[in-house]
Image (cartoon, rainbow, N blue to C red; front, side, top):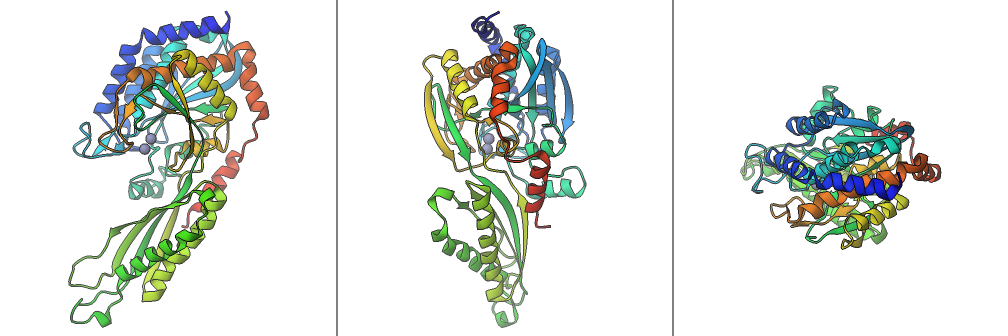
Length: 436
Ligand SMILES: [Zn+2]
Ligand SMILES: [Zn+2]
């Protein structure tokens, strides 16, 4: 059967399953869970795999679910990813009242796009005409949050890295995948839109403790060492460095004080700070990280406080594959001829898809049909078809393009692609970012 006919078949199949796909997205939104705790969400995804007869493994990197389907012939393996975790957004209408978790980053929609592609490819029967495998991958913990909890899991030997995709790479769960794609909901983009980006920032995370000496704040401040003053000087040092940040490196350093002291009439002796150090390239991130540590230490040196810096690997900068991006655009136009295509340029936030992008070709387009800013209570889906069905059809049709004709297009992309890092180099690189 020719590719156009196969594409018509998958799109018709997705259209006849829209109610199920929408019910899935709603069901996931009702029970939002934070990273590495997505037990119920993973079970919902597994139930869809059961319904479709997709073989899968669960409990990967604690909650990950990985389904695999086979084409009629052997060939490359393409993964479609759906992130399982919610974000903290306690004032969202759908927030979990106990944890504050809510799907304010649209990961439930991303999952719906992934399972939509699964409904289309599996139920239409088109796989028999393709050469290669498709992995439908429910991946935990994209949001880099609750660091103490994750450090605890690491200390217990339950995690090696602190985000889902990094941990899955470490566990070898990307070893049998050749290329990977996911979408992400866009912000304030109600119309059917595809925003294609090339890159994002990467970052390292950091917790800092200033240890001083307590004393009566009024009677004997001369006997104390004020850890809050040390921390404030550290943050002033960071601000004084900002003029050295080059525009092209898109550096973002955004520290917060998480503990500023204990009691107002005692000199603060234990003050805690957290920050990310973000940049467009690993080189800029690493060079800036050294400067930030020096500034933080200088605050302690000025006051005589001890400074303990714990740096953790965050997420690597994203590098998208142009050929896959173009293929996404071509098929999005078939899925909806009225779709608007935008260039989203460089994304100054980060994603752990960046880590995967150092090993294989990936894409991470932003999809409209939503209003409000990400991570806020105002974020919501106003057009489900634009937000989830359009990318579901686009993924399914892209896979037909990539794996038809003996997988010719997928093989050509892989032949041209030069990975930035091998898996071993990746693990070594990330291990090197841990300061302890
Ligand atoms: Zn997010
Ligand atoms: Zn997100």
